[in-house]
Length: 103
Image (cartoon, rainbow, N blue to C red; front, side, top):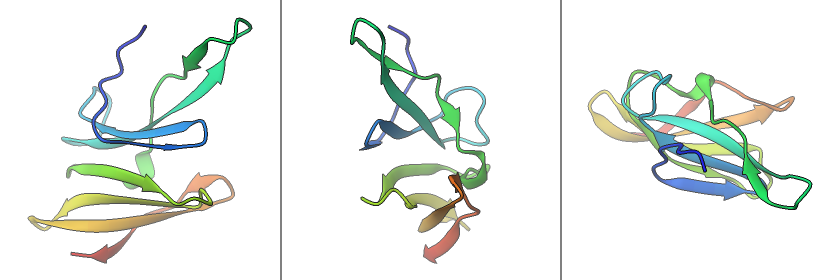
């Protein structure tokens, strides 16, 4: 079993979104994604975590949540010294630059 250093998680289908300070990120915490699959023995395997670069900054992103239709990623970020909520919309299978919802 490989260690992937996860924080708060949200599972949507076979995708597990999480925040982590693992190496390869942009800042203190970033939002990452790993996907579940099954090998021939029907054992669960997880992909190597991928940083969702478009939503991450040098600030701390955390608490990911994906809407039931899978088209919106909501998360928190420290913004100008205060907590804020951001939303990224999926377009053509890719997360887009997030917008500030409330700070």
